[in-house]
Length: 199
Ligand code: ZN
Image 1 (tube, rainbow, N blue to C red):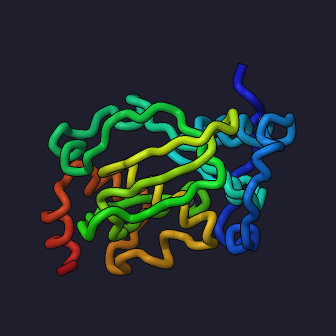
Image 2: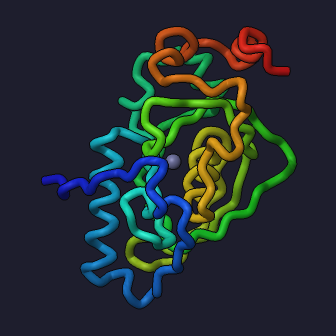
């Protein structure tokens, strides 16, 4: 049985701009944190989305959940998935993550946010990141992410730093998710940029 999903707050709720506190590692196995994690996973599945940060369920703690299930990309052409370097990802719970940007290579792609429902925009993100964190059992983990999961990681990490993708987006690319899906979702990024007049 899935845990009851808490409501995902929307942009305008001050909690998305509030400072976040690290989780005391000694409390990770306690019900308060375990219930919070299960609620976040349920909310991410219900939305559905590929990542969620605790501020998005109204809790100012440094916790992220991520998962990219195969059904999330059903129907997208292989060349689009390859360009985005997007492959299914297992469920990851990242507590007190410390993230380093790797190298100088960046990629521009569209992304959305479960707290900015109905819109999407292109954002430049590093292609690769290295993360160290505690998992849901409190065990230290290291993860090096490349491509799409690196983008999701940077987006979610930004939530812990009170930043939303609209703070960083390429503004000419901002559009409704419906229009994106209807017109652009299966296009390669160079064609899309040309069409939108983005250098
Ligand atoms: Zn978001």
